[in-house]
Image (cartoon, rainbow, N blue to C red; front, side, top):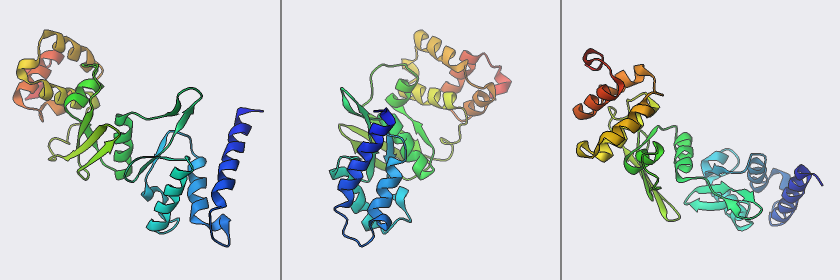
Length: 232
């Protein structure tokens, strides 16, 4: 049997089991049916929030549908109001997105911008191999803390100036340098950052350097060999 047919048969079995628990006259028009159908039509590995199903029913009925799907092991609840339609592996079972991927999906849902700070910025730039247990992001959205297993994601409100950087690489470099501190930036770190910044648009470096602390502006100038008037 082809893989697509196996998947279709499995979904059909889950759905048949699922709708038996629906106590309405027309199952095809139920909130449970529409929530389930929307999820399984998409690829595995996606996160879902109750707000993704707005318009399908009341907030309470949507929450109940998601809870039922969790009990049927269609979804896995990662945190309050956050559900995963997990990818499956024949040996390892459910596969989970990284904490970074979860943070980015939450930001997209909220139409907010986030900036990794501290150890998260260092890890994203590969200046450290240690995966941070607590991921802290600056955001122009709502501040919040979310616990995912043993890890924690923190969204911290930031002033407009800190969120005004344009270059994706320069933004990370500025946050990484702030984490290291002026005394923690040695020759090896500078060489690594110089190589990283070669992939950034010079226009972004020029713009973002003006928003950084003076000592970081000086390092950016040194690493990118920009003239003083360009960063003035």
